[in-house]
Length: 390
Image (cartoon, rainbow, N blue to C red; front, top):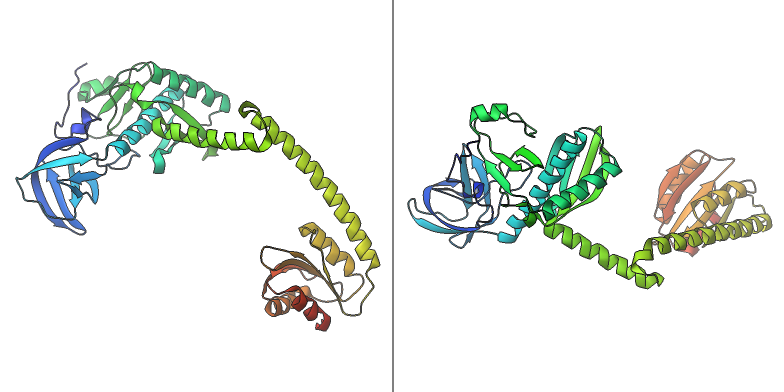
């Protein structure tokens, strides 16, 4: 197959690792937020296909943005440049490398899933911190993802050449390749032999080894398919370091080996759940005693329980309402108290704004019971309910 570069002015087509180059200013026009500069050649990628544009500088001046307009790569600068002058350009190397790792890893994983399972991509995005999301049109199982991830990392280890080229229209017509859109005009193909053939306009490495690794972080159902979140290369390494540090901290906290922390956490949670049930049972028993020993009142009853949860407050209010006109139960919160209040005789919806206004609270509910929180001190709450006329 004839492999020919259509536009030698876009240096990233042929060398994704080129981050420093010289060029000549073709044009410089005043724009809304600066000066729009075009060059006789450029290695700055203007963004596209789910990947953001490069960042960097021209003659030491930071670029405001890079974008494509009417077939030209436009470099937006805060200062004017003279047409015909020579300039030295520098792309931010590490961000470019990280983006190529993420994009290349996506090509490999998507190509493998397409080959193995017939998966078709509906979308791709390379976001902040080079976190990649891939949306598929059909569901992908956990087992399929594990298989595809393993094969993707093997393809990286084998350092397979990555070839980018522009086939002729006739050659393109006879080709089978992945693409999310219909193209008009010239199409650039990025091919990883035996792994993937995909239409792509972005910079790529010369071989898969530079991608480093692929790690799937998450897969969730998405619009009838699956949204896959992954990281590659340096981003995958950083994710590994962060999680390994977390595992070591858990290991020390639970006095467990690093390869046994999952079991240790599960055991600790089981014990915590058992303790929670014991506390709940004790709390219910104490609540029963307090309710039984609370004398009936003509107007209001107000009770505080530092251990009561939402269900406990509900139980207090509901059962104490049998002994008075209005019953309220309070438990400490980060600020003030949470509460439940109930009545068998009065409409609690009409009392809610009165309580909230007097005690700096908020909340509401039904005609028989309301829930909320107050910021008032305990003494103020007790005083309010002593004088409340329902």
